[in-house]
Image (cartoon, rainbow over all chains, first blue to last red; front, top):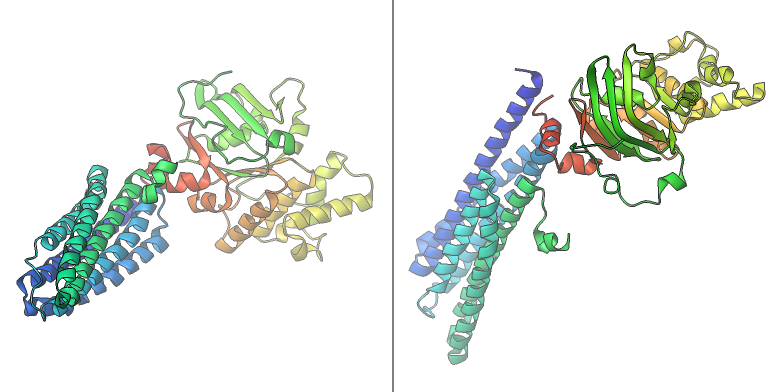
Length: 227
Length: 276
């Protein structure tokens, strides 16, 4: 095996490990979102507390992935598709860490919410959570499999999440108008829907990064339409 | 001569919009349908490319891909190889350099060349730079000769290091200094185009950096074409990169495009080290 082939193999090994770490992060972030919403719906204070204190591993991976990317750039000076893969990994890393932070925000809102009487039975928030989690999972699958169709599918799903957020806001507004005692907990639910919508946006970012990585095409902010 | 089925550069698209260099500056190279043979063996196949003045064009590709042969067709250095044959056309500022009326010595004055191994003559530093000026009778007086030697050494960023020992042997210089001396020697005869065949491959990183800095400074005055095996170097110094493979020009585009998002799979495989 020539030194060039060895170098490529080493780089590819490193890249695979990097992808593994990002998947691990994605799994942790997705689970945190799932548990935070479950804690809210089930009014489970223990579960909420677990989410609030459980972001250590995700934060540690955030730093590790950054360091790995930094080292790969310095040692291998990757070009073309390899360069795009590392740049995509750096950005996806940030998005996943933010999803973890948003799960914490949801848990904080849930903690406040469960100290009040329930405003209503929660239906759309778990629905939003499941869409956001699926988007995140699909975006990461697309990253690992270099699947631009799946990435595009994630981009298309974002509208459903935005529509649900608007619906939740309108519905809760009627509750708040009827009974001012619901204002505080209802605002927390609105915040939760906002956080879930942001998680969808981060999944969308990941999907856009996948398209950039594979096709070298920038689809952010409808860049493709302008070019 | 027309080219066929080759994935070749589309000249109007390659480098970004600028005023037409054919009007603005001298040193434009237009290659069309170039085939080059060593005996029966075709080593360059239907190469068509436009090389613009005041830009650095890097030629990259695995060993034996024809990039050095291509470089040498631009000042007819291949003429001396027995059995060598050229088809197609190479024009510089519209003049066909393979036309029978072309004075090859004058062509090589206009198209200077720097080689991989520095090759100073076993003469003084001064005489090395003055050599081309003397044999081409390009200076009017002794003072003029001295002035041209000084300005050439300054252009090659060597003056400050050698001004106090111009009459010592060129062989006493370090490798990097010798290479810059060869650049000064090429610049002394006031070429329009500078061809460089792996000019820094035998140098350490510091000397390499100086050569790269020099290339950057020189491009405002010359057309520069550089062959390099070092892709980071191509990425650093060039505006346009041409990728050769098996005697064909696979892709020629802006350097940032070639190294971030090349259009051809072969280019991508090469710049990511998957072959070569």
